[in-house]
Structures are given as structure tokens and as C-alpha cells.
Length: 305
Image (cartoon, rainbow, N blue to C red; front, side):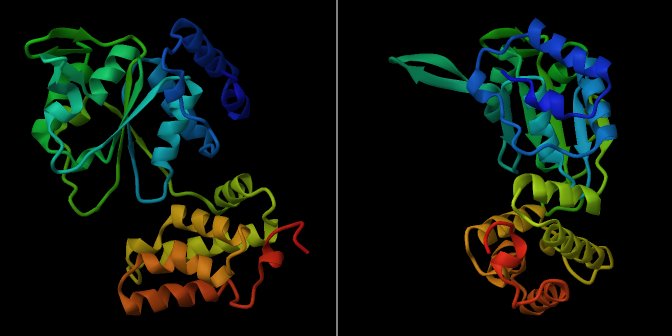
């Protein structure tokens, strides 16, 4: 695998060398599960914290508000370490069997069907535990032995699985989402916790231009300003968090680049995420304070005149 992402990271030379040594020591079997780093999280301090923790054999919990790049960083870390990635999205019906595995029939006989956590543990993958604070305590309790110094799992009827030395767990959690709950101390103690900062205007401009190289810098600055205006209104409780959608902003820019009207693209990517008519008008007014309805695609992107 090419070291492109390593070359683009602003890390100390020692950390970069340690990552490359980790790759050499633990070559991955399932190459197709190694994610591509089409976008790279922008934040040197956070990168160094996460990389250092993973090199020390620790599991990482990324904590922060919506649109802080938790999932992007988790995917980037798997790409940087060249590890196969298993995504586990938690929900209220997730149980231990969904994580570890369960019995099934193979050629008329009962056999074990591995779950994503078992597969990651066996093959030295990075298991991304998304929205871990939506999980029931009894479901994640089966991970306690895998997450602490024991680094093993007892599979009833199938013996004990020792974790591959390259296996790591990266969990993410948002504050205040519907259906979330407090994590118990026993679980939190098995992670090192990284507080994800809010994305800055400069980082957002770089992100927009990285994903859309033809986007004019002036246009990226205005779109970033729209996002920051929406965030400020969310912080002051003038709008709900539905309006604060970084993925939606990036989606809207992609629609614009493909030829969609600017105001329609912003409606689809951001405004229509709220289903309250009054709030929808507030979001639209906030956007139009920065972005004119008369703005054309040619005004935003280079090479379209």
C-alpha cells in the first residue's frame, strides 16, 4: 500500500517511522478492507494524540459534538496504519451475538459465524465502535476482556480467542443525541479519551477545497462562513442541531459542481434536514444572508466560464 496519507500528515518524523514499522511488523491480510484516505482530518495535535495512543496499544474514544470529524479521523487512522477496518454501528437492538458471532448452519452442521468484533480481533483489524453511547450496557460488557490488559474473548462453546497484537478499538460518541446514554465507568476506563475540537473556519475552507479543487477560494470562504453562522445559532439555541450538518454542506457543494442551482443544492444538503417549517425558514434566511439566490455555478467554480 502506498504511504500517501503518511506523507500528507504533519506528524513528528519519529511517529511516522513508528507507523511504518507497525505496518511492516503486521502486514494486513484483508487488503480490500483497508480504507482509502480521500479526505484527511485536519488537526496535528489530535493526530499525534491518537497515533501515540494506538502505538502504545491503547484503545481510543473520540468524544465531541456533531460535525467534529470523529468518523473521518477513525477511518484515517485505519488507513494510516494500513489496517482492515470493521464498522460497528450501535443501536438499541445490538446484542452480544451481533458483536461476537453466533451459531448457524453450514452444510447441515452447526458452526460459528463470526461477528465483526471477532473478525477484527482475529485478523488484527481496527474495530470502529460508532456511537458507542447508544449501546446497551449488557451488549458492550462482552468486550471488557478484549478492551483491557487481558486482550482476549471467551466464546461459549468455541474456546478462547486471543486478540491479534495489531487489533485496536476506536469508539466514537456524540453528546445529546436521541437514544444515547451515559457510558459506565468500567467501559470508559478501558479507553483513552480524546476530546475532538470544533472545526475551525480555516480547516473547513481547506476541507472544501481539498474535496472540490475547482471551488474558488472566495466561494469556499463564504460557504464556510455559512456553516459557522449556523453553528453560532445552534449554540445560542436559535436553531436545532439538525441545521449543523457538515456532510450536508459537502453534499450540497457536490450537487452544485454537478450543475444544480446553488439555492436548491443548499436546500437539499442543509435546509431540508429540518422538518419544522419555521426553523426551515430561519435556516434559509441564515444561508441567504451569505449566499445570494442569484449566485450561479460559474461564480463558485473555476473553469466554467
